[in-house]
Length: 184
Image 1: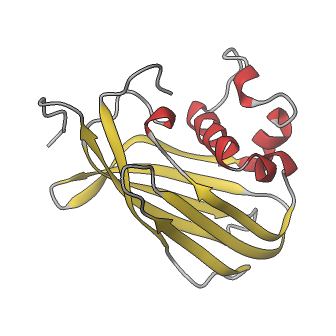
Image 2: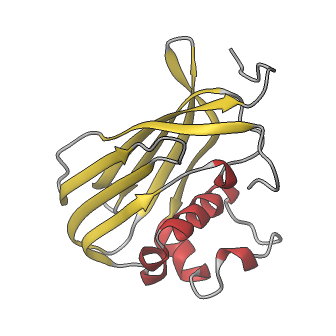
């Protein structure tokens, strides 16, 4: 995460749910509310009978010419396992000596900032799972992001590989100043 002043601005433009309908989830919402001169806020909402074990596949893509190419972060991890280990300690106290997926810890720390109750309650999940007013801004992103167009894919699924939610969030990173920091 960034320390001090950033050299870019993040602007989210669209959030969608993909691969609908889901076998084990309903009333699925992926929406983005845009604000002028403020970070956009997302709403992710889904209803489930019960999800005993939850996994997340997260991938970041950079738009190069007309297609999105994998960039920087791509991981699949056991959400319940990470939550069980760290929900009582908080993510700031995680020892760097532990063999952990740093992308997973980064993602969970953002989830904790946006909706600590959903993170602390842990697995199993039942009923409505919602992240309202979920936001991503420059303080939550790595300092090394190149300017350009991005897509974030997040697919939550259970131990039977049944999708709970699959979303795509589109946005851009723009450099502040006169230097072009894009990769294209």
